[in-house]
Image (cartoon, rainbow, N blue to C red):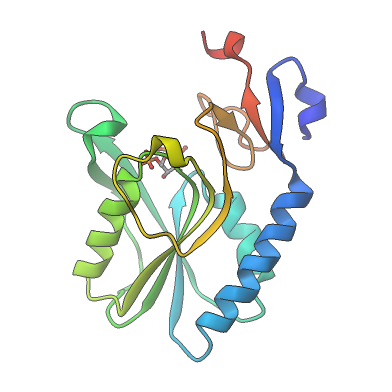
Length: 183
Ligand code: PRP
């Protein structure tokens, strides 16, 4: 569904489906150039990254394997703990592979920084990141992100894979959730 069909739940539309698809085409061309002749594997982080992975992988002008990881933060009970638990591990052996992590959003950066270290420890030849969205003002730990779609303000955004209590993931656009929905 489109943001216009959910007008009561949303305030601003930050990125439309059309803008997302155009950006992913652009990033796919860069990635294809950068990884020509290399043993590349895409790793999506469930569940938010499913839409980005589906559209980005199909925009790539080369065949590429896709694998998935599901993680969750625990420890202090908040995402800010930076301690990550693997809920579903990869099926792929990353040894000597060039890994591109595909993410929907970088908020604090804690999930990614943990994944980068973890994949490097598995013997990957290289580990880089593609993220559709980044909230620069929310970053707690710096992560080098080679491919970024859009920098956005630190607001509660949903759509295109991003949820609030598992809702809105199938919204085609990325939009700001109206405060009355979650307060
Ligand atoms: C989101 C997103 C990233 C992570 C980013 O996942 O998909 O994986 O948070 O946050 P960080 O930069 O602060 O670590 P979430 O835990 O909401 O799970 P989901 O993808 O299943 O919705």
